Every structure is written in C-alpha cells, then in structure tokens.
Length: 118
Image (cartoon, rainbow, N blue to C red; front, side):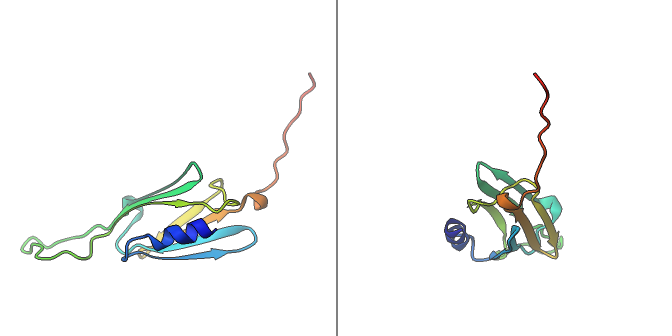
C-alpha cells in the first residue's frame, strides 16, 4: 500500500486522488476534470494500474490560446497494493471524477474447480 501512496504523490498537480480501503476492496478516487469515458483508458498490467486520460476542450472558433494552464493529460502507472487484484475491478466516471474499485484477492469469490476421473 505504501508504494501506491508514494506513486500518488507523483501525479500532476492538477490531479487529486484519494485511496479508501474496506475489508473487500480498495477504492481509488481521482479528480480528472474534463475527462470522459471516451477519453479515458484504464487497465491492469503486471501488477500495475495504468491510467491514460485527457481533457477534451471546446474552444470557440473566434478564440485562440494565449496561455494554456488547464491541460490535463494523465499517463500514470500506479503499483497495485499486494493484495489487490484487477479481476472484477469496476470503474465509473461522473463529472470528471474517476472511481475505481479494486477487489482484494482474499475477498475474491470462491470458485469450484471441477475434477474429472482419469
């Protein structure tokens, strides 16, 4: 868990994050203003949470940027806590807030493995 906390400190200043924990899962909440489901990709690869997102901006035709400080392009790889799994993970984006629920491996539902006679 401490590796995840350290990685969250390295996120861009425009991105705020909270990590919550229950007995069954972790909840990662990221403020990503302007990011939508169409401009966001989240995956788990090799024990790391990979988040790529960008803000979409509508600029009126008669205007041009003189200064642009609100750009958000997030390309982050965060280590998963050792007991977290990408299996069964769920995420939502609403009004620029990404919520990811990452189940704990110990809380994964049990599965019966069929055994056939040899």
